[in-house]
Image 1 (tube, helix red, strand yellow):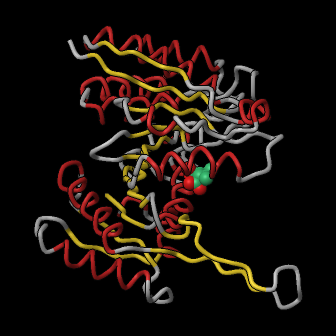
Image 2 (tube, protein in one colour):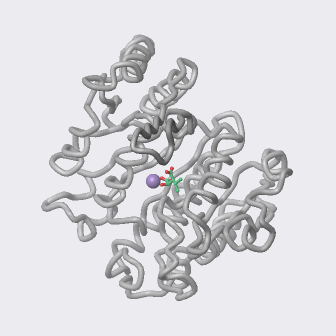
Image 3 (tube, helix red, strand yellow):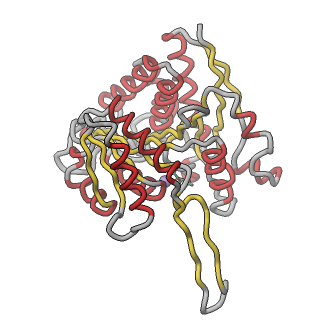
Length: 351
Ligand code: IPM
Ligand code: MN
């Protein structure tokens, strides 16, 4: 019997509540699919930072490297200046574990939850492959004449051939394996950002030659947001850089029913990957047992698929789909018609 090692970082705010429901589902699905796991809890987050003045202990990254996967709740604390925890925990783990792909499925499970008119589940079913280690997130830049009227602040988008190519290759492979339309859209800004997107476009076109069965496609990022609303059914798999991917996946989350259902995976195909709901720590709802745990449960489903328990991954997704269709009144916190823990129980019941 397989025995996995899973690191759990509930993090801040509602992170703990949604992770608890995810772990409930993990326990149930492990039994049904006959695998074992050992989980180790880590208290990284705002509370720990305020207590110890340390964002991440030095040993964190090397310890996390010994796991099969990481399950994360949310990072962000109202009493900590924005940026400290996000950069010091979330982005640090993405970078240091070289999770160079951020995989974000955009799937509508029930048309009742789509804010777009006449769009059904068959119209909203695509995946964004977001580059997760470079671009504007690299943190390169500087100030000149800071605080004066002549101040200049520069923020550089750093794109390497290696970084771009491995992301595009992953996207082609993903499209080949899972794409329903076998179409890979490059989402960029070749008309204005003529250095970065020249590299992206050239790399895309070169790698594309190895995948004659995949339909090539390109859309500017601004137009992409328009298509998300106008005809999302066009999309199958989208590959884009870190910043554009961050932005378009929030819009993607809304058209699939909101942050309550949107999950993502930070993936290192040859290393340790980390799965999380893409919403934040929602301080307003913390401790109230009203937050929607389905995004975290979907993230757990993705985790299972990535470690090789594909059947378990499908079971979790199917159970989520059933609960969304047959039980929930709404996907937003406080409006589901059920509490956080009841929603977790419903998923377990439907496995
Ligand atoms: C996300 C978040 C993060 C990002 C923040 C919290 C650093 O918005 O996962 O999309 O910008 O990547
Ligand atoms: Mn984001």
